Length: 86
Image (cartoon, rainbow, N blue to C red; front, side):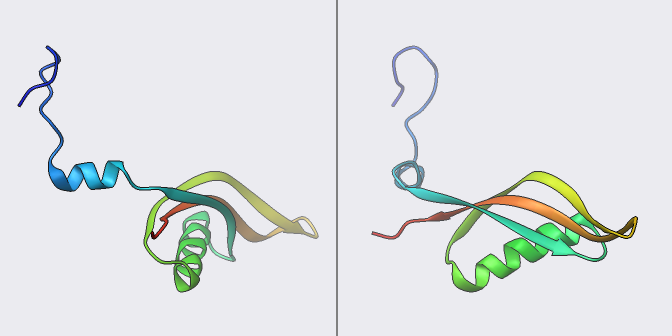
């Protein structure tokens, strides 16, 4: 079945369920001594130990920790969404 002249079909039943979901977004910071990628991965994997049904992670900021003019840590600020359960 088509909606009003847009040419788009109705969403499939499984897509309709997703569209009616609610997600929470939190901001966390992961760190690594080797890279920003590892810092982001650490953030997601650590959050996954206490949160269920993680959906999307967005890196929103990268920075470095410096000590005595040397980089000592890579830091990734990550927004992570997870699904609320009813």
